[in-house]
Amino acid sequence: MTGKKKNIEVCFSPALFPGFRNPEAIAVIVDILRATSAIVTAFENGVDRIIPVGTLEEAKAFKEKGFMVAAERDGLVRDFADFGNSPYNFTRERIAGKQIVYSTTNGTKAIHVAKDCNQVLIGAYLNFTSLKDWIIKQQRDVIFLCAGWKNKFNLEDTLFAGAMGGELISSGEFETICDSTKAAIDLYGQARNDMMKYIDKVAQRTRLRKNKLDDVIAYCHTFDLTRVIPILRNNHLEALETSI
Amino acid sequence: MTGKKKNIEVCFSPALFPGFRNPEAIAVIVDILRATSAIVTAFENGVDRIIPVGTLEEAKAFKEKGFMVAAERDGLVRDFADFGNSPYNFTRERIAGKQIVYSTTNGTKAIHVAKDCNQVLIGAYLNFTSLKDWIIKQQRDVIFLCAGWKNKFNLEDTLFAGAMGGELISSGEFETICDSTKAAIDLYGQARNDMMKYIDKVAQRTRLRKNKLDDVIAYCHTFDLTRVIPILRNNHLEALETSI
Image (tube, rainbow over all chains, first blue to last red; front, top):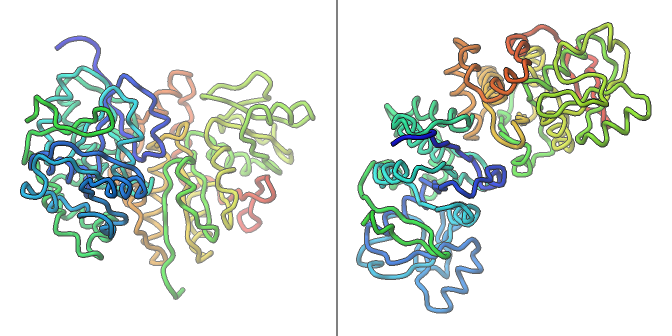
């Protein structure tokens, strides 16, 4: 490939996204613990569509219309929902061929914030290489939108953005002038040799442990369990054809 | 000292500050390149008061009333202003005993965002140890508000927050559960052995170089040139009595 290198940016919070106005860019939504890891798992297990909704009210309205609903807040399943946010809930038996409505504390909000970008993809370690290869082929700027925690910075999403940012720069097709990207790459450089030890100090690790939900942490940091890439089309997520 | 440890948080952008609601906390404003370094320099050189204003319109109105005004945007002095944002402008000959109105791209906005905190202080490497000692004595939570760049994350303010965060934790009086603070401490850990080399990659370094304003970078990363601590009182900054 030739031509000018494309730009990488990392946005640490949905609240900062208005400052990253670039409608020509691809947006990659990152919510490693656990929304984007769960979404990638769902498509690997054959879900047909996921409808991401921002508010619990919307999720409840879909439930009343007969949809299967996954909904949580602060890591806990809501009582009207069929199940919550753990990737382990999205089993093939439960979801293959189905449509699911999904609402989480941070991740689904981030999807909506980015919806005016050229494309909106779902990123996780689970589909890392597949997503990286696809991004390189597009020859477009890319913005990693970290879902964070209630609009605050979080480390686990940042590390993923750093891992991906480093690989894209190594490809020779991308560059960055963005301090967030440089910070993410440096933090991943510190964490990569013992991710589980590093992740042990992040705030979300503590929250998940408190609710006995920390069984997914190693799973959510596993590279390349699938080639599937969820993409936003007309307010729902589906699997990119090339990725199935 | 005894009792429960106080909490450290780092806020990477004025736009994220509403999520850090803690009116009992001390806020430390950080804009290393160059607003808070310039403000600390001004008080070391005997300025009486600095009135930080957010908009250029306000700065202009003060100028028309006869005030001495320092104002810049994007690193460039505004034509109506007496001088701009370089710490080197704030010489004793020019400012001793005077009141100055000050408006910058990021730093003065951050001061206004934090004004409902218990105390609002101005932090820089130039007054590092003095500020650290004072914070430890207060026995209060502390939030480092990084001015960033147009509401985006920047590395140089983050490194300062990491340097200070690490020292406060080492004092035994502070702890943190904040991912931003942990990231800042880890980034400072990478940068500290060769700060000038690390700073060479930050975006603001490039902006300053472009405008031939990068002569201040080493100065703004020099520890403890003064004991003075600027503090916000009734919409102006003055020197804390204990710090003079």
